[in-house]
Length: 122
Ligand code: 5GP
Picture 1: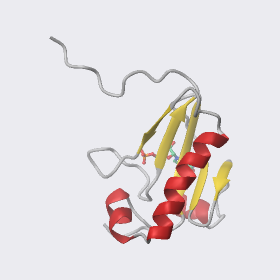
Picture 2 (picture 1 turned 90 degrees about the horizontal axis):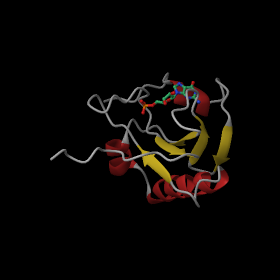
Picture 3 (picture 1 turned 120 degrees about the vertical axis):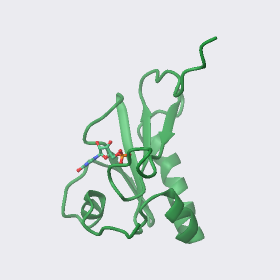
């Protein structure tokens, strides 16, 4: 899928739309989700134009990958979820209902999150 330069996160990166910034480095930006699904819900995005994790894993430089992963860890620390724990999630494509076609990792925390997938019933 070709990258859409008009997606909402591209506009945030260009400063055309405001965000509640938590953390930034050379290769990544983290900000609060506009519609939080947990007490703490933050998004971490690469600054490069990558549609999803498949695209990022194939095309990003080692420096971009390191910067992005470090941003996830630093953002979790910045919002104070590392002691009690948190969940990270990245929706990729149609089956995962990815809404914004720019790679983003969700960080959820600040409350018990339950199991991500229910165990099978006997
Ligand atoms: P997805 O379903 O693509 O994994 O998640 C997209 C996320 O982006 C959603 O959780 C949604 O609330 C968030 N989002 C959509 N538009 C904006 C926006 O303009 N600002 C911020 N901060 N978050 C947004």
